[in-house]
Length: 121
View: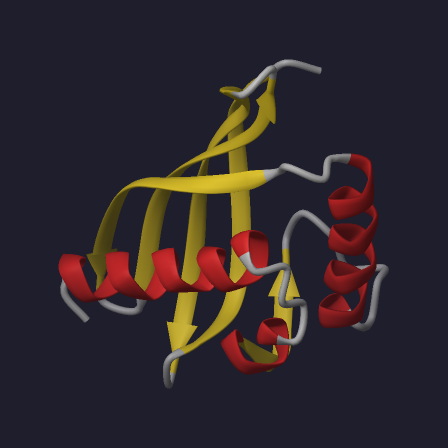
């Protein structure tokens, strides 16, 4: 996968997940053995945990969305620069900035880790 293909893959993933609020897309994009470093080893079902976490986040922040800024692909790893934002007073307000690292196998996300380098909270 080249950088442009990786950008399309990640952008479409976040569009379906955040813009469309389609939690079922996790079943499509995430491998059955998906592991999320941010969730940790104690949780056995990382897909279920992600759905529960995002469901609550979508309620708490009804305008939350993600901008995919830049994507770099190398072998089976995609590195994506991401901005999470909300709409406040009709303006985009960035609440988090981070770098998502996605390990891909057969067009599924096998592992993910996000390093946050800015958070307003």
